[in-house]
Image (cartoon, rainbow, N blue to C red; front, side):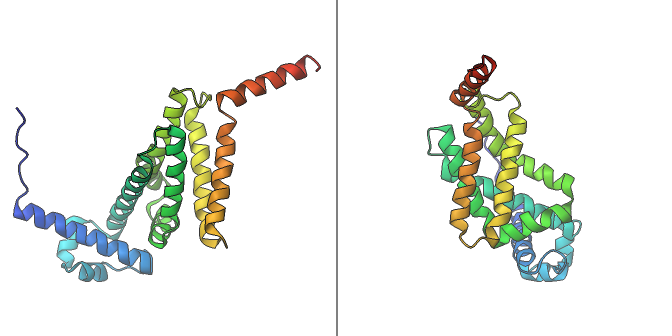
Length: 218
């Protein structure tokens, strides 16, 4: 027999609504004005709460920024999953997911808050923790599934996954300056596919045969 899940009280609902309002206001102002220019007073006014309410939920502006980055990374993962979940093949899920993530990276709010400002504001250690928990975790799940299914033959799948992540991040940084963003995204995807193709079973066997041929003097 399942126990009934207790309903939230009105106070709990109000508390959560206040927190979500601060997150939404912070996200909007951080995206528009940048972290340094954003003020707690302005964020509180936009969320229609007092400064006291702000400090009830967040220790300071940096704590709110951290929560905004976490929320945006979680949303990015949700969107990638929604785009790719209908695909039966892991390869298809991986590359549709990469395309979906790059689309997220091209959005002005995500680009400014997560890509441009978060590493400097939060520090590399905290930023990497959030990255590991959300987009990197999703990428590594696909990489490990390909390794488990014998579709990728490479012992250090974590290193390979991080190399792929670095390539995705580089494309994401270049997209805003590209004259043809969709063409650049397609080229980046093609390069990543070519890299991974080198670690598929057939490619590995071919490299082994080539080495044997060279060794025998053919």
